[in-house]
Length: 373
Picture 1: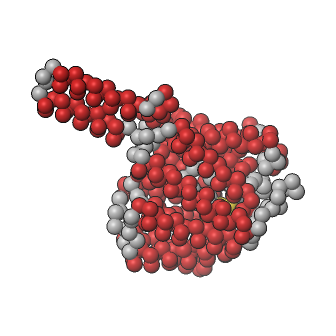
Picture 2 (picture 1 turned 120 degrees about the vertical axis):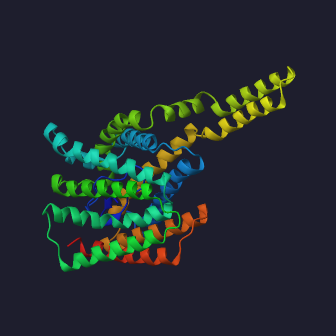
Picture 3 (picture 1 turned 60 degrees about the horizontal axis):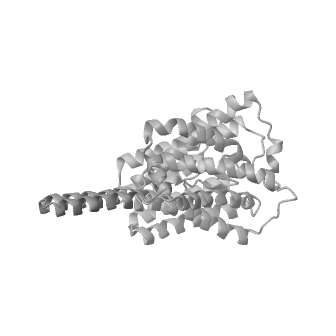
């Protein structure tokens, strides 16, 4: 996934991103890296996660976003607990006491919104291009402002209204210029933005004053969201993704079935069965090979590992530079990702889309620099 706040940067990738992130002093035991060192690493990891996920969904045809998100969260829940016991990266978790009351009033509702955001934003990749999804994510600050205004948490100002108008106009122009526009995909991504914006508003209200870096947030929310997604999985994708993954573990399911089909074709041929029947059996085997995605344990492991490394990089990014530097790094990442997706998947970004996205990005930078005030 790639709409999560890391300092002042949009860090939402389509894997478990940080739940909260405030610019805070890093512990003494954690080495600080310069912005020049960590920003390129973060851009590569951030873009790599999105490209890898899209490859799984659309190139390998493994169209099970709920399963993949659940796997990422499970990996993150285990990984953060290993880091807690072996490194100092999660020392901040000791400063966040989680009581029963806090869990039900804060952690659980935010976790529900987090799961909804991740599921919807990942599902959007089944309908929309990577470039267009990145452009739509620019609307997240507008959604945040609209929610805070509707709930009277903050009052609108002339400057913020201008920013809302800039971003909204930019996204509208971008949508108008999208060649492969999907209304279903648009509403799914819009729903993901809505969930994410609501989650960020709740974090500011319910967890105000708590200092949590991305890994601490992930440590708290990953197990909760993984369990929520496990409850959703049977009603959305069923056991089909589990069957495919299990088949890849016990032996190449597709190759085995194709071999069986070919064997059956040979047997039919030896008994003088008609050529049409033989062709039908062989074709069924080839069709099965095309339908069953080549998902291997190694692919799933490296995909989740890349997502987890992104969160580790995010920890160091928080203290690497000023808010403006991190905001510009986020904009650079989005621009490079849009350009890269066009090169990799052969998409098109017309003049109208580029103009609309530029307007939206200018509004996004103004929003970040103003601090949302």
